[in-house]
Image (cartoon, rainbow, N blue to C red; front, side, top):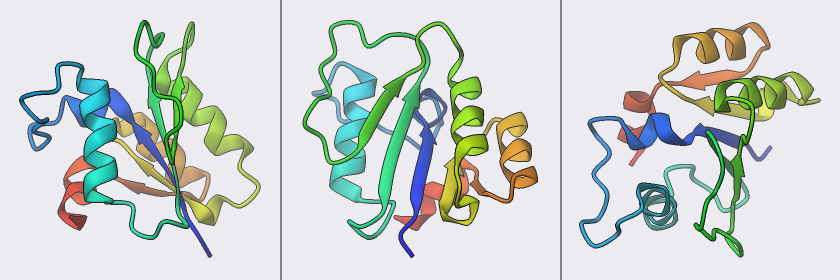
Length: 123
């Protein structure tokens, strides 16, 4: 069974273990490049969705092998919760966040939850 990783984008970007490339100025784009390069979600059959707060602005993230969602008027946390709630196969989800409320919610829904420290050592 393939997995679907839902990553709290800004949560990972702001983590002390994430070190973006010095030549990439937008941290969101740096995260996308990091995930492309390091493939921490394993198999290419696994789906990856990165959820960011707010709007994309002038950042173009089209044509990627994974989905990037901007939460717009709601928070990324609320968007992640809705994704978890609506998943018909909760055992296929892995939520990556250090936000305690998100992790607890995911666990209550039967979804695997990883903190950033747990996710990054996979590399």
